[in-house]
Length: 297
Ligand code: GDP
Ligand code: MG
Image (tube, rainbow, N blue to C red; front, side):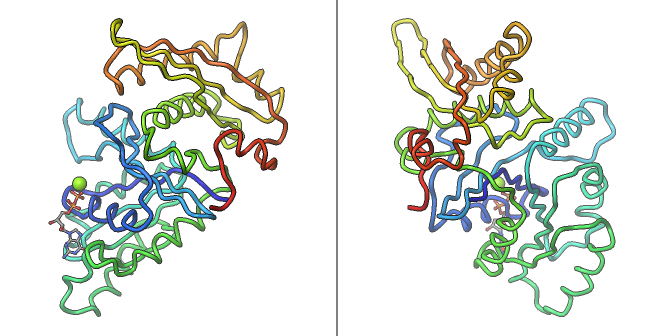
């Protein structure tokens, strides 16, 4: 099983939404149910027996000189350092200099593998123009792959998905398949908690972590939702890291997650977090199903 986060980036109108729909068309699992304020917004999740691809949106990288926008660019780059793969879309009809030069320059510091997808190839009258374009791009920075696609017709999209799969690390299904459509909030909540764990334990393998949401009770009269969630890890040492000195790290995870969850759900949230060690849960089918993960379909 491979899984991970894939950022879909590119200038406005390059075809990101069209590509997303094309990718998710047949296997749609979830699209975010309401606007979110998280930095990496989950756009959709593709799940099949071998892979789970969580497609995320990131704030745009915009060329600018003023200080505020520079901060936005820095924020965008920071979110890009959290994903496993970056899929950068450019327009086949526009020369790269005007279109993508600035973004390419900004991406130089990012460590995740970058796939360059040259979109809207269906609009090219002369397909022979593609080769010089690919050459030009390949000289700007080392891409993991450069793929011509048409998000509209679907041409090349399977190859793109295959390439993404290859670049993803091994990992569990973050989002249990069968719960996706009926309880999207729970999974976004679990996702937000996982994101905070990930932030705060950069050195550790975040794939050893699973989040389950045991309780999700709405208290309309108090405009509050009470949530209880468990962070599952594989080793005692990981539990220690997540809890931190005198519970400091866990408190920080809870604080940050609660802020995001409140913004997501638009009400007050009580968040109880527990950490549980389940040795090698990723290898244990029983544990996986207990966590709502399934092997295969
Ligand atoms: P976004 O702003 O990056 O999300 O771009 P959209 O997905 O909204 O697409 C912008 C416009 O480009 C829309 O009119 C799409 O129909 C069109 N578009 C996107 N991908 C393609 C493509 O591969 N071929 C053609 N011909 N049009 C496309
Ligand atoms: Mg769009």
